[in-house]
Length: 145
Image (cartoon, rainbow, N blue to C red):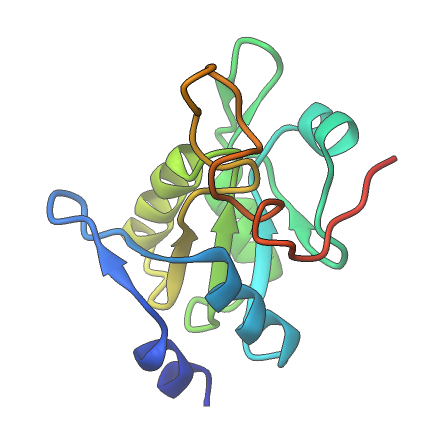
């Protein structure tokens, strides 16, 4: 059922990396139906200060202010999920999560997707996030400490 629903979602593919992405609302629809899992790859600090999605799994792609790559990312993903499960990855803007999808694809995950626009969306003309696209702007569920 999840794969059929994915075929109907507005999937796009990066021609260079093969990373497949879908809009936040399409991802939420499948998560809400229990057909997919959501992994937030942002830092602990981002989850705490910016907001997080209820019932998502946190596996950081990078940590700290220096954004040091988490060398255990793929191992942590493998310890929590089967390689054929439908999994969506989310970060602030969709860039880190795309890199994480690429790494997961190389590790053999077959149904892993990037959530386009991320949690906060793209920068607007004033160089601010949170106003142009993204999970929060789409009015999808999130909470904050």
